[in-house]
Image (tube, rainbow, N blue to C red; front, side):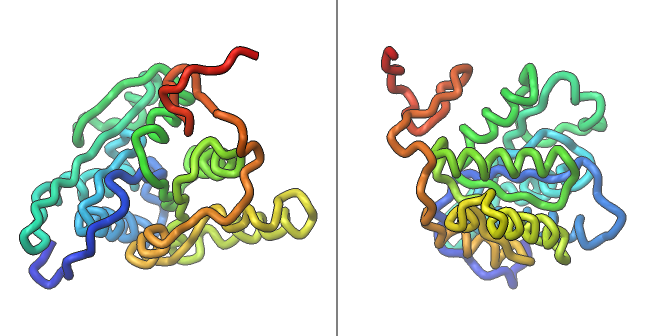
Length: 232
C-alpha cells in the first residue's frame, strides 16, 4: 500500500471469507473490485479465507492480500494471511501451478464450505457464477436458520447483484421470504463502504430455530461448538 493510504481503525473481524469467481469476467471493473477489496482487507489487518483458486477473481484477491503481507498502520504491525480450502477434484481446474498462501485440501464441496465458514468471522461475495451464488445463498440461509450470526456482504460491483437483490425483494413481496430476513445481508458498490457497513452490522431478524443447537457433524461447527449433542 502506498504512503497515501489512510490507517484504518482496528477491525472487529480477524478473518473474512470471500466468495468469488474463478473467472475474471469480461470487464476489467470486476478485477479492479477484487484488487480494491484485497487492499482494503490488508489496510484493516483482516486475514483472508477463500476457495483456493489462483485464477480469475480468486487469484486477484489472494495475490493482493498475500503481497500486502507486512502492512504498518502507525505503530501496529498487521500481517494479512491467506488461507484457502480446495476440494481435490477442483485442483486441476482452479490452480494454475501457482501457490498462494496456505493450501488445505478437502474431500468435497460440503466440507469446503463448512471449513470456510468455520474459519471466518464474516462473508463477502464478489461477482461470480453459480458456485459463488450457491455459497452466498447458503451463508444467508444458515444465518436465517440460526446456524451462524456472522455478517454477510454483497460487493455489488457496477450493479452486478441488482437482479439478485430484486429477486429477494420479489420473494418477500410474494410471501416466500420473511421481510425482516431481507436485513440478513448488506450491500455496497465499493469495498470500503461495504466493510464499514459490515463492521456496524447487528442481527435484526428472528432466527428460525433460536432454541436449537445446530451442528455440522464432520467439523463440529455451529453456535454450540464443542458442546455435546443432547440425546433425543
